[in-house]
Length: 416
Ligand code: SF4
Image (cartoon, rainbow, N blue to C red):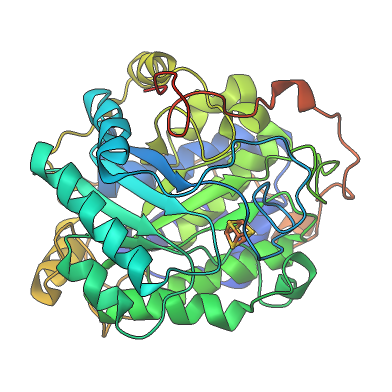
């Protein structure tokens, strides 16, 4: 082969791997895992060094959503015993955001449950952005409010939102199995509206919902085409009270392979290790920092993450460093394109395509593919054999899932 050498070389050139190569990464054996991590780690370090960007979630409005996304504890008819509350006041949201910033976060993600915002909701979020930026001028703000209507992306951008998140979540072919109240095309359209308004697009996936390797490759290739600046990789948190509560389909090794595949397909994009890292990667979390250059600090929307101080200790112990506000997250070619498009934080131009144009050289300090072990992937893996476990057949780690009982919407201090 050499599959891994080829993938590293393509990653350094920002060249798209073939579908077969991406499938082969997912089909590697546990014996090959460290070679896969090392190879994808070279691509990660070429574009992002050893920096880790910290992001902080603030759930502005929790639960009571009319949509039926199967993975979500806030969905219509959810039996999950999560916190339920309506819109936080701007000062409450700013206080929660401030805790994240004090903990080292350079981006605050303002999230609200629901199909999409009303114009009044956009006003509320605009006031919240102003309240946060009054205290923290340099912080990046990402809004995540669901499907956008005409003109809302522009209004959010004018209010100071640097980015907009809307995940594709899974492949187009399986989208209808996960959600029936809106479509995959609706999601794509919202990401494109955010891009057209000059915001940095953030769009990712959820692994572990019973999808095949081909589905995972499909959604990641779709993301490459959509060209977000950041790609959150979530691992399903099977929360009691949701239809997917019994879906324990992931091993730590599979999570690492998925992250490596995403890094190879979207080499110069902010790959964010998102929800579910603690419960699925468990003691292998630090290895994932070789693949992702970004994580969420502290808690998630409706579940608790590990303590913020443990996140910071993990980053330091693994030999990485928290990215400061004086550093631009994205490589220069992407950040320059964003500046030309008028985005405030290294975002996407409305005209772009792919994760970045192919053929440009990696930065001068980029590593080469020379040290990647050769011939490490078996023939059946290279042919794209699917090795995912059948749905729900792995050991449950439900004991590791804790519903969030602190931070936004409570009287207790947030985890940051
Ligand atoms: S993911 Fe969003 S739209 Fe879907 S049910 Fe949850 S809160 Fe509602």
